[in-house]
Image (cartoon, rainbow, N blue to C red; front, top):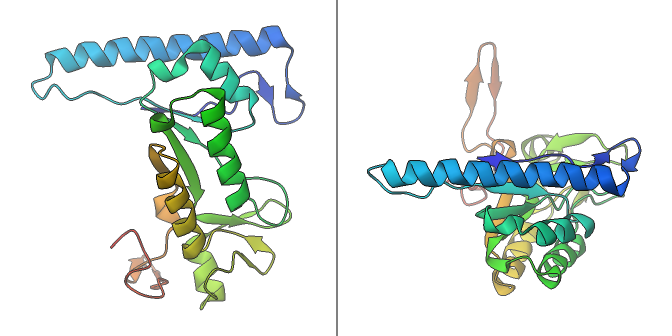
Length: 211
């Protein structure tokens, strides 16, 4: 199960609430993690496979959330903690610099590196905040120039940037990458849907994780 609370003690219109409200929300989230962990572990003891059921937790890497998770020891109950390193303002909503800063920040605050995952987007955003899937970007603007991360005012992550972020994640020893989301990737073959056929958009067979 993945818990993606956007965001405890926080409102998109007014920002963080007062400290008491924030603390209560995070205590509630901690209780949810503890209760889920207990139920999952009990199930695993009875299951013939004995497989540990995983809990993941998504968060926005603003520094405050990491500090709250560290204080609550939330990492004791979550198997992975997904950094939503995208949806920034500006021309590039998910830059390499923001990704690296977020990884370093989580580690420096004291969250276990092996439980952190770097969120990478399979979509782009324009200056108004409107999003477009990677598939649609390719469909409308193919062929893309290698390493170019902005096209028609849409900031996205090119294949080369995803590779660069992946190498950085490996070198810093974090748990891996989290993709939001795989269905927004390019298509390897045409897919008919009633009266419409969604055409192949992958530039080559090796472009897509769907291989």
